[in-house]
Length: 199
Image (cartoon, rainbow, N blue to C red; front, side):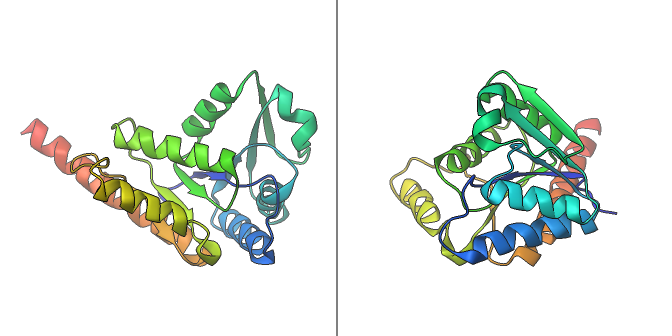
């Protein structure tokens, strides 16, 4: 039984220039459905967002789309999803996506994808959650960001005790096993802390 019931996937509302981006989005959606893991995503029917959601649906999975009212026409709602939540603004969208997800996966995307990913990393860095955050590094897409993180460490802006906790998968088939292993490790640590507190 997977310790993860739902994954929030951040990804582009476009397809990018490489066919493998959409291929991996579809493969992730299929695997999630087969593993009984529901999708939480931005609600749109376009680009990689639409690809991952349709793949979950096509393989019998459950999808929750959360979209701000002003984006309904631009990103075209995916009507087939089991649950669509229309919210007044981006802040509400991101809060609900966080609340409904056990883990976060970032596929390739643009500035919106980057912003959502980094926000979750920031919240985790500040101790607001311990949910796993994973980047699927298709074709080395996230390599420049990983280099920037290394640069921030070298320059003393990511300090000991404030390390970023994230996972990087090179292959789509590694995503769910890596997330599950992370959740199990976190629960072990949390249980040890509880035991030490109690006794």
